[in-house]
Image 1: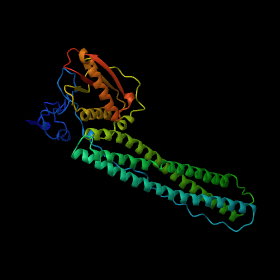
Image 2: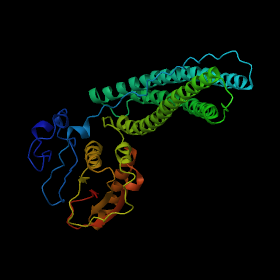
Image 3: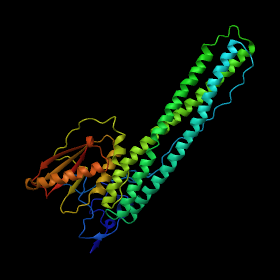
Length: 380
């Protein structure tokens, strides 16, 4: 005899506790499985003695634009043509020619830096596209024909990691470019300051005054172009580093997905990062009678809890990124050791999904009324 999750939503607690509406179709659209296989673990948003129901999971908790390509700025920067100087032979004219030569070097550096910036952007775009293509194929295969520890997907995962490593190699070059542009900003600013404040015009001719003013305008323009390029290059570096850090976290949960043969989504670390600044060190510990976010009942040796656990944790972190989680092993005294082992395994699963260690606590309660080994997950 076979059963389908779509026809057993109420029996397995996959209804909204507030509206009774079925949970999203993508949660329900799974293949029928034999009765001998556990369809879902016992998951509940109520106490173990209460009605079985998991929190309603919105689309935002399941669907994202991952994998997505790295997005960088697209500004292009050209040095402005420098004003011509007269052929005067005064000390002032000679000084203006010296400053114009310095400014010409700055203009050459602007052109060179822009070429390098565009090269690095193009390389990053190509590397990101290659990485996303590999990850997308893995995710597509997990959704289409999931198979635990698929050797092909494991090989593709290693390819994705290598692609991400290649993408990160240019970070040092981009950082050096940012430093170079920053140095040129200072040089252009010094030239402008010299022209503005250190040039004695008391005996200058009208032509020399005009030449100084034009050259000062050129210096100000160069400084402005360089400042804009510095800003974009620094933003590109920050965006690239953040992208790579996020994708390393996503690769970690993707490895777990391949191992389990089921798709998840983005790393919990990315959702949790938004609340890092507001996170408190301690939260009120749960007590018996409090309503858990999830209850997992280990009534056999093959309870597959990772998928619904991920979705419940995702929902909690979307509501509050600084949420703190407590895992509680609940069991009669004679099976408490088994319950603690299961709690440790659940904690490890959450860690592999990216949940930071500082957001997970662990304890245990002896409950003679418990049917067996259980793990309750509470959120504060």
